[in-house]
Length: 238
Image (cartoon, rainbow, N blue to C red):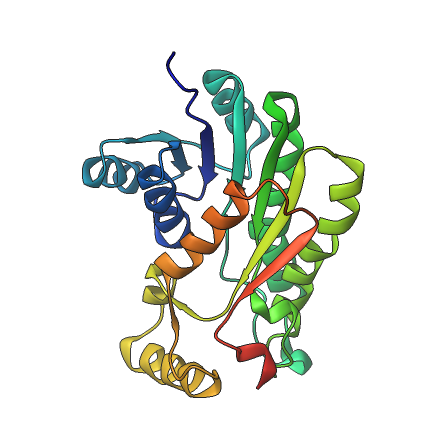
């Protein structure tokens, strides 16, 4: 008898942490579907690992998400690695429209993606959100980011009770060297990354694969729910 291969859908899975999780889970025997807005990245993800199925979907669009979920039918696990770059900066000068944009780019797409997926998810499957350690640290200039990621993490425990036996968890990464940082000028990027590395307890920043392995652990461990797993090299303790 052929054993059922569980399917994992990873939104924001065509680059960075999402793609790293896809690679780890694919190697672990899962059927993996990644989805993102960038068709070139989606094509590259599939080219690098033909076992990974790539689709185009904007997680901020209910229409796009419903189209994707209908296309896939029923699946076992959902990972939401959707992010944005707005909401950082000193509180005294933090523009409210930037903070709203930050919520629109990360918090609301993650909520929407989870909500619309419910009819398609296996009843005892899982949803894994991806927040950030800014929710749990105390770094100046990150109050807006803390609000966005803290809002995601605040949902985990009540959703785990409300949606059981569906497992609800989150991974909270620290500073991870991914293409997310490429938007900055090289000199500024290196300065920020070096500062972050020196603040960790392990003396370096994280790699996307390390967060991907943590996501895979949560997906595969059927006894973990209502948990936010910190993957930050101890940055929150500095």
